[in-house]
Image (cartoon, rainbow, N blue to C red; front, side, top):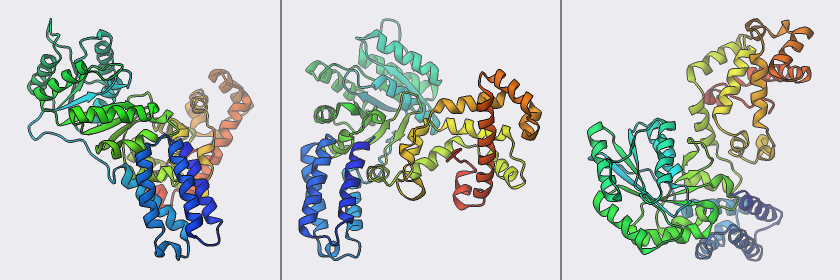
Length: 446
């Protein structure tokens, strides 16, 4: 996400660094380039105008023009304004003091509401809540069936409705009553959508709002539709008073115009972004982290959070001890690779790294996630003795391992070489402060 905008902004800042001194003239030239970059990223024109004016006022001040490193000052100002534009701080979900808390998911047909309902239910379950989901889309049986399948997959209860129930408001009321009786503290209501906004849809949503008094009305939109998503959000907010936005398919949107516009246009925060098809691919939106990623500074905090979710702390401490005592085996290597896979696609993980220093160029590294699967298969084809002591793996053993894993002897040799390199590298890094923060987790071969 934001890839195109990041590339263009970094080019602007590089040109500024090439100037011997920052002047009003070259600053105006930079602002023109930033304007083009934002418009090409499909940011709303009113938002672009307000953003540039705010940057201009701060950047043209005497403090910046006379600074020892004016280009860095400009980067700082742009970062600050991006954070402000995106909402300043992470906006958390609200919950009722008298549970269950009802949350309406609204939006146009095809925006990803039903899948998002499942992702949000899983997120709530992972963060200490007990959600119940219900679909009130009585017009498309397939939508209700889809939510039922999703609910089973993520292990969250769904209210299917009493026999003959066909009124959306009554279905939602039944679900709320069921949640109260079964100790569920959140009811996620997946509402019906249309291909476009019409009076019938809005009237139904207004009835649901009046009957349920939801704590959250979350507008779900496809980020790849750009300004169409922003316009729809504006209209839904005008009629319903949405409390937040969830943008889906952010992983496929290289422009990011909707994310940069939606807060400014609606006045409501972007609360979550969908970054993949899996049910764990829903992330809370953090304005400061997003601004850092846009400017190529990476998102190390999100990286650390992903590591901490994937890494077993006790297991990490055991691995660290083994490294220090030279006992790190192929079985441990395999376990580390499995933890790596838990964090998600490797290319998306590398994009969280800052584009500077030792991390420069990492986001452009092409990584085949299937390679990890092949490595794990090779290690699984070894005997326990071989995994415990790699030095006994001679030529005949390598041929047997290759046959058992459906690979070649060359690939087996490569895995053993990677293991030796990782073992050496991890041992040298284990005593570092970052290593202690991240457990002993490292990317093999990097």
